[in-house]
Image 1 (cartoon, rainbow, N blue to C red):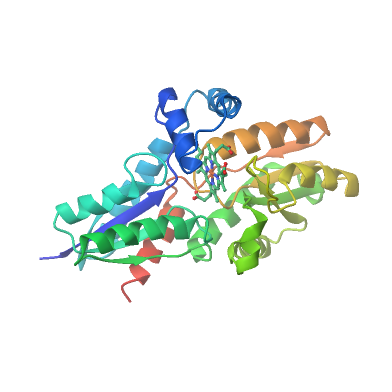
Image 2: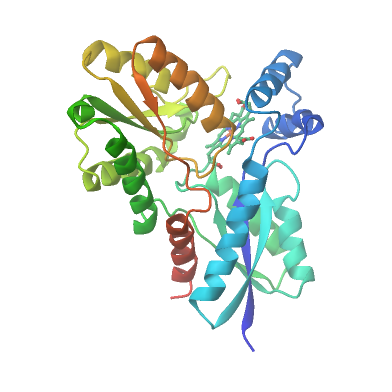
Length: 309
Ligand code: FEC
């Protein structure tokens, strides 16, 4: 009889329908309702990508694929995946409760975000662990980061190479690759948060293995709050590249801090970055996000199995 292990797949969450936008955005703002103007602006961005984000469906598909892969790869345990979201149902706490109700006493938690920050992954983990402690006689191993898992790096190496292969050979040295991740408030640096270093390391590994000539890193999707955010912002970085390297023609965007097609990629990259690049006379390229690509699911599965060694 195989031991049943709970697999807590934690992710950001997205509004399922238009009416969810206000409570979702209010949850992101820790219970403070954003201004009508901010709400209208967010609704307009969802509208621009088709009304809602494909993220809800993709997160579920990723959790299902990971559960399946883990159960194929070994026969000691039976993994059962539970989705636990940060800002909308099913919430992280409810998922932990459900595991307990289903008779599970050990779980592994993994966030669908490759890089660790106190602001991102730690926030997910704290909520899960707190709930597990409340329940009692329930243990959970929480994975902090998995950005350096070789299959994950390989996914992006292949994606960049595929994009480069589509660019005419004589124009390949006129191509710049931009690695981006979600910006965070600058105050994270004060406590030595590893987030910026992990992202730099990810970009360097991919660039090295893909033999990239020209690449740079930038931050995207910074919040519209008063305090300073990590920079350079990707839009400024695009302008800088055009000023310094007028001969660049192609720009390949790799949003390595995210793992699915969603608002930040479909709007911030595919709309905002594309518009700026094209207005400056360049050509925009962006590979498909990891979604349920087998290499990506293998990266997650290996990370989970490593916690049992
Ligand atoms: O619906 C979708 O398709 C997109 C869902 C979504 C993902 C996501 C990922 C990250 N965020 C991170 C940090 C912040 C910080 C703030 C912030 C604000 C928003 C807003 C929306 C939103 N985020 Fe998000 N993020 C997604 C969606 N995020 C909507 C609110 C409106 C806006 O600013 O656009 C600032 C909070 C504040 O306003 O004070 C900080 C980080 C990630 C990547 C790691 C992860 O997925 O956990 C970091 C997906």
